[in-house]
Image (cartoon, rainbow, N blue to C red; front, top):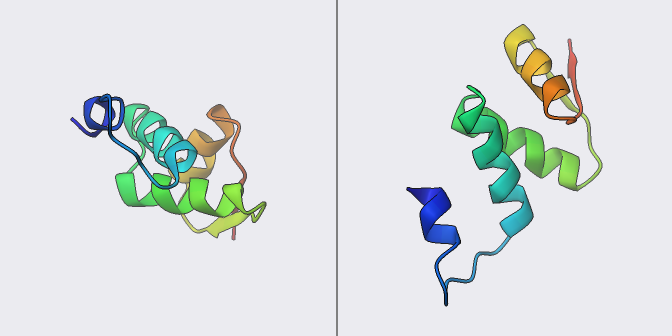
Amino acid sequence: MLDTLIHLEGVVVEGYQILYKCLQGYAEGMDFADALHLHSANHEEIVLYTFDKKLVKLASRLNASAQLL
């Protein structure tokens, strides 16, 4: 639903690229909050450190930067 909303004519989304990548991560099976944290950090060129092995694996598939602690 969010993907449809952000592509409607006349809708302006702050941080569109971050949200779009977040929705891609969510579609790949990532938790929405994890995807949002990951892509927000990566947008600022910050590596996301986590204890979540699944998140690191999914991030790698999406060419995002997450490292296991």
